[in-house]
Length: 114
Length: 111
Image (cartoon, rainbow over the protein chains, first blue to last red):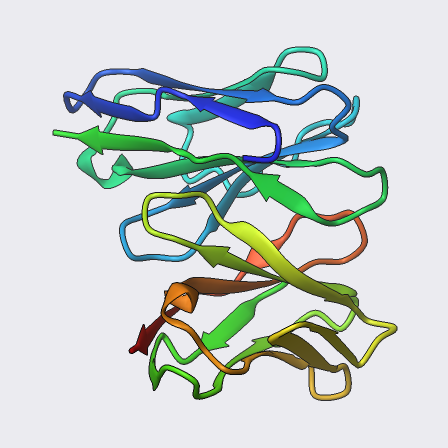
């Protein structure tokens, strides 16, 4: 929604494999976020990119998680050596207005680790 | 850092009744408080927000109130309809910092 496209929409992977989740935001966004949502749970902040500043990685749960943003566009969230507890919806969100707080979410990537 | 608590975790109301969801925050520097609605299988959608220079904001059947002194804010839905059934999240942030979300409230409106 609102100019954020995520892929894949669903991913089933075997424990121990690496996965990459992609976020394609509308051009002109000012900041990009990744959140994790476990089944029936709230939204857990993972990482935040804004402009050329160093990303805020304070929410990444372990060193198996990393994220990159290419220029000011596509972002990928990588989970290495997946574990069953990584099963969740991974949501990408963007800010559209400089200095504005409102963020708009994509539909999410559902990850299931079996 | 900011911590947001949300209550109740589930809420069931009869169609036409009002629903109230409450949140508290810990960081007095927070100045932006949005509410999101999440329907099954979809990403959260912003429904209303309020900034710290305003005490109340209303949009049709939805209103949000903010008490800065007590550090709590609430979502009020009047004349509830079955399509209001969803999970609602509150959040708080300071300026352009990241949003910290509450744990969500599952609202069920029975016809």
